[in-house]
Structures are given as structure tokens and as C-alpha cells.
Image (cartoon, rainbow, N blue to C red):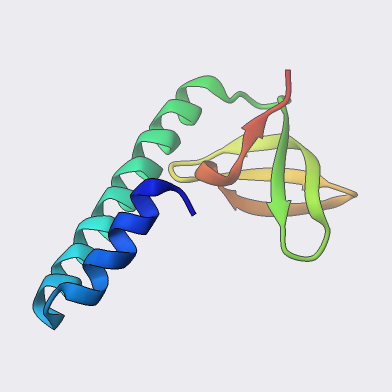
Length: 94
């Protein structure tokens, strides 16, 4: 564990239930904000025909081609199948 995580671990054992709940909400809000920022950034970069990669539960890292860019998702074709993938899960392959 990093030093920051060790500090958080110690704090979690000393905080009240209300403080833990508030900290959890702050972490969740920050995660949502970062996901939105990544989605906006990728939406401006990704184009139809771009090669991308994403992590799939079944197959691990999967390469795909963008068929259509939507508001929050991209329609991609991977291994002959089309999938709606959240923009935040995609990484553009150079």
C-alpha cells in the first residue's frame, strides 16, 4: 500500500460512521467527475474508423474499430461483433 492509502486506512478506523459515509461520497463524486472528463476528452479525439482497445471481462484487452461515436458510448466492431462500449473504457491505439 502507498503512504496515502495507509493514512486513509488509519483514518477509516478512527472516523465515525457519518464521516466514513461522507468520505465515501466524496470519493464516488471524484470518480464520476474524472470519468466525465475522460469521456469529453475522448469524444473530441475519437473518430469513425479509429483503432481502439478496451478491457473486456471475458477476453481481457480487446482491439476494435469505431463504427459510430455516440454521446457517452461508441459502437465498436471487435472480432466480427458490434458492441456499445462506454467512451471512458476506450483507449485510442496510435
